[in-house]
Image (cartoon, rainbow, N blue to C red):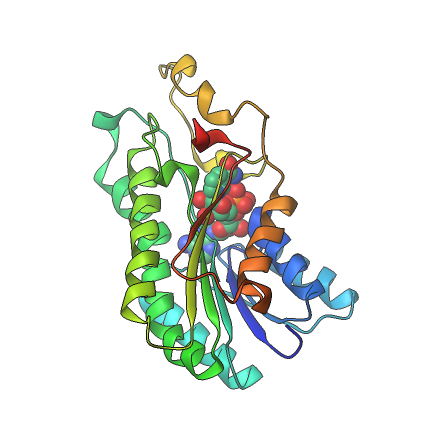
Length: 247
Ligand SMILES: NC(=O)c1ccc[n+]([C@@H]2O[C@H](COP(=O)([O-])OP(=O)(O)OC[C@H]3O[C@@H](n4cnc5c(N)ncnc54)[C@H](O)[C@@H]3O)[C@@H](O)[C@H]2O)c1
């Protein structure tokens, strides 16, 4: 991947941060975006201290113009954009009938509209570079999970967006794939705020029989899909959930 530029969202912490380190180890130059300015800069500084070439930019992926401007800035700075990794997302947990309009709209805007805007903006660059897109979906996008209606709907939407793009651009020298992690020990739960009235026995099976996943291990799957070693993989939805969705 030496000389290739990877644009990674949600790179301040959690899985996105691990993806940044994995792709830096593979030789990529990095353009990292996140809404958390301080955490993002800390991640970027750590990568730079290891000798990697990194640009960090505070972006709210829910805002179309911010997505367009960031992609243009990345392409101008590095002269190309080979890989887009859509990893930023938020989750909120609630009883279905208690989900507010604000909550529904925000989850959709960050988790689905953001990747949509970024794919639109980045595709011309990715085609020029013969690169690829990796969307981070979720096991929630593959099966029904209680109390996560908006989140799960966005992840199912992202899975279909991945397949649709793969088909629409099947004649172009690009690849579009998605990875579906299962539950991982990250900070995403901080925004979930489940009400005390939820029934934990209804969600416990989704934490998987092998426990929580490791973000660094999932990041390796994303980095592999983004690499030329996965040249035969296009339109694929890869689970990385320790078997949670297998049965
Ligand atoms: N942690 C899990 O259990 C789990 C399971 C399946 C899938 N995933 C997916 O993995 C991905 C990474 O999640 P994570 O677990 O590392 O959580 P995380 O909260 O640690 O990371 C998400 C990142 O996205 C950023 N972000 C949120 N809103 C943003 C916005 N509007 N604009 C830009 N950046 C924004 C956050 O600041 C954060 O750095 C997400 O797509 C998530 O849906 C996570």
